[in-house]
Structure formats: C-alpha cells, structure tokens
Amino acid sequence: MSNVLILADFVDGKATKSTVEIATAGARIGEVSAVVMAPIGQGAALAATLTQGPITKILIIESDDFAKHGVAAVADALSQVANQSKPDAVLLVSHAFGKEVAARVAMKIQAGIITDAVDVAADCSTTQLVFGGSTTVHSKVSQGISIITVRPNTITADFIAAIPAIENVSVQISENAKKSTITSSQPPVKGGRPELTEANIVVSGGRGTNGDFAAVENFADSLGAAVGASRAATDAGWYPHSHQVGQTGKTVSPQLYVACGISGAIQHRAGMQTSKTIVVINKDPEAPLFELADFGVVGDLFAVLPPATEGVKARKA
Image (tube, rainbow, N blue to C red; front, side, top):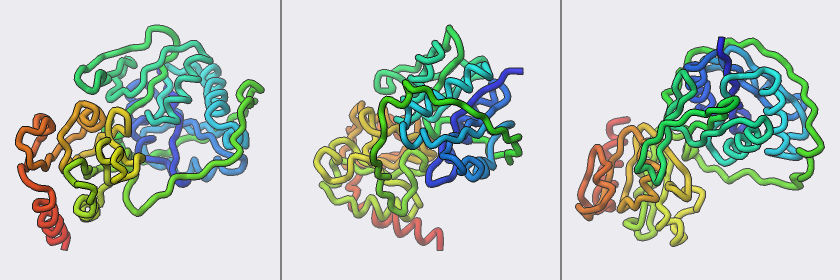
C-alpha cells in the first residue's frame, strides 16, 4: 500500500483548511500520515484539532528546537521521518514556510521537488501554472520521494471525519540545523476577516479605488470575505503589502474572487486566476481582467459596490 506524509499546518493552535486539502490530495496516492511538530507538551493539543480529512495516522514530534531554530529544525525532523517511513510523497502547504521546508527536505534526502502544484494525481504527477499563469505544466518527480507543495484552495477538501491512530515519534535535531537561532518573533496583526490565502471569498481593490478602500472593505464584510489588493495599490501605500495578490504577493484560489478597479496586469492574474468564479468591476470595458471574468460589471466601483453591499445584507436579513 502506498503511503504519504503531510506536514500539518496550524494557525492559532488549530489545523488549517489547507491541511485538509493536502490530506485530500495525498489520499489519492495512498494512506496519509500527518506529521505534527510542536513544542514539548503541546503536540497532543495540536493533534486533537486534526478532526477532518482522510488522515489515517498522526505522527507527533515534540521539540523546543522548532521554535528556537525554526525552519531548519522542522526540515531536519521531517527528513528523518521521511527516511524512516519511505513514503511515496511528502506534501506541504505552498506558503513561504512550507516551500522553504520542502526545499531543505529535498536536499537532505536527495529527492525531487515540485512547488505550487494546483493538482496532484494518484501517480504523484502534478499540475502547475507557470509563466504568470499563462502555461499549464504537468510534472512528475523522476528520482526519489516526491516532495510537493500544494497551493491553498486549489484542491477540493474532503471534510470527512478523521479518526486517526496517534503515534509519538522521537527524532534528534542535528547540530547543523541549530546553526541559526530565532531570538524574537512577532505574529502578524490580524483583524476580524479571514486569512487571505485561506478565504473562500476574496474582494480585492486596485488603482481604481484611488486609495479609498472603504467600499471594498464594506462589501467584503457583507460577504464574510478577505480583502486583497493589487500591487499598484500596495506600492502606493493605500493598503498593506501583506494583502497583495499577485506574482510578487500572495496566491489565492477562492470560490469567489471579486476584483474592483483592477485592470488585470499579468502579475496580478498570476495570483488569482485559479479562482473558481471571478467577478470584475471596472469602468474601463477594455480592462484585460475582463478576459478572465465569469461575470463583469462595467462601472465605477463607488457606484456599484454600495448597492451591492446593501443587497447582500438584505438577502441575509
């Protein structure tokens, strides 16, 4: 029977939706074991939040080195587990941390790596969107274990109840993994909206906002959506760079993406074009983003969004 390791992803002490997504992708290949890395004494609590997804086993690794030495220690531990269990594939969430861990693991165990996959097949072959999303590529690792990072929101998660076996695993973090030490860290400031890369709905604003994101935020709040921004908006200082969607920002793939006052440069399209449904609001009928739109509204966002917001609120009432 084929087997797969996934590195469980947690935010605020809870397993993320992306963890269920990579577990779903992994189950296409074989039985899924989720690796939980935690400070000493906290592994069981984190594992208890893995209640959904096709996960057959949870491997808990506890060490205070993860917090002290960061990605190097995590990659070292995951490499040891991979060498011991010999999985067909190791799947990680494709964010900055996941991709750095994946690269280090691939080097340590001499395996091939594929990043930013938007689909994974039973034979470990993957689908990627490259060159700003203009080209679809099908890839497969030809040597060793397949190390794959999967873009959030691109796999339809299977939220079945998980009743996995739990096993505690001991590893010895190598001295090489301890050469750098984290002296301080500060978590990002979070508001009441969903995390951008995890959200099912994203409403983004661009140059057409003229720096006023109030209408975009109000519409997003009516939908329970995350707020994104184009590079033009973040470079102008109108919105934080942490909310930038695009090739040099975050990649999102929600069920619904609403672009407000965004022309649709290729860099922005690369970060959102895998969204399931795309709605574009722009007063320029020639805006390139209309080419991707499932629904388009030619109009000023300041005239379109307020009544749309009231309409959503009325429907909810």
